[in-house]
Length: 113
Length: 110
Image (spheres, rainbow over the protein chains, first blue to last red):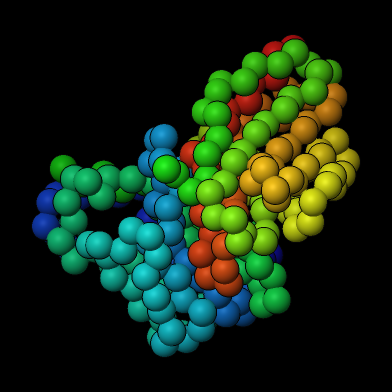
């Protein structure tokens, strides 16, 4: 089954404790991206990747890092989480030749206390 | 000004009626427009895309685009309780940037 898999689904952590949210897709998609979703603000892009070793900032990259060492994986790293990063996070991918993200992960609800 | 604006709702419609959702965008060079449906606690699901002025129909859904007015809409005909969800408008201004509205919550009452 074609899918984007995120882990964990839920995470509660403390301020400053480094964490990684994993994202993996099994469709050989070149393009992957990370979004955060907050009430009243919609989905905002954090980072995107056009291919292996090619990443770029989205609209709200501050406080986040990403890496793309393999085509299937695109982890989101919070080096020093803060309460304002409490949000719902989605990883997404796009088929080559498509112009929109059609495959989203299940979401990761992160709470930073 | 937000790049993509939608009425937050909630929009309540009776079963069988037409639900009309509106979206405006600020970047005049935008070329691609999308509607996603998001059920509570779930991830967004792409339901419609439109690229040229006019109407595009897919089943009970019709997307309408007016680039001169920078306006895109979604009509849901014969609304069903299963259509109750938040609908997200998204606009692509270049190959990499997809901007989303905050979403309109639709409730279809039986």
